[in-house]
Image (cartoon, rainbow, N blue to C red; front, side, top):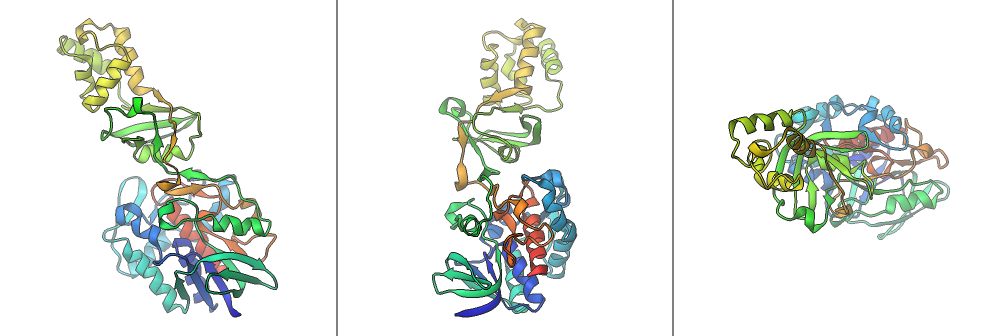
Length: 391
């Protein structure tokens, strides 16, 4: 049987980082992945430019978990400045977009190439197209693969979640955890478009509101909202989807911060013969303005015939439009998986399973899910780095 010091399961952001750090510490490292190419989620992220971190990434309130503070140990020791420094040394240019999001100027493939190169230069071995079928815990560990077993003193599970199934995502990481008695919290799609019935989507597909607020409960996000053939998408919707649950309504403020009632009263004075939708169309796409005008029952008379109460009702609908999703697009388009290996079973500093010494879980497979905008990548870098220091 082949023997090595460390086997890393998964050649994504967290797995490659763990492998690099372990190999740099002199460990014999083998990184396995069933895919034919390493770092595929890195490659497609950020529209192909990789939103590799966020300047605010070390904040507990930007992560969903049964214990959001669990992530702070790793995030505090490998910070955005650390991954930035690695890209700078490699000559990979980057820029800041809105809300602290950092993207590569060029292709995300540069980041993948950097990680693969760093692993090789550190002495680690990358094996692609190797399916992992299970893990046995006996005098160390035996990783069962389609090409034969590998014995190792330590194993890092960086298999990701179930999101983007077309790229080969599986639940192997969760199955490995359960097989050795480690609990897994409920998993569900996150950062995912929401779906609605045909009566909602008809006539609205393709519209965009550049700045809106999507809310559920006390949580809200101010970003773009996009209307699709199946429902709603865009950054504000992807963000709120992580907090939304089936049966809950979403409240949309399509003109956040605006005194829309006053604007409509002013329009009534300037253009009394105009339709209400004409005034609304100064703030919203015309087709959406028409839909909301009808929903408020103000499509039968011009602005001049509308009372202050009617215009206030119109403004309230635009600012507090309650809509009920039928579901989400699911793992097919979800960017990440919410939930995962229970953090209560892991050491926050090393990501090692408390009950199974030598077994570490990092990245998306753990019950730590970040906001949209580079937070999940920073968790991957930081957790992979932390495990790499310990194996």
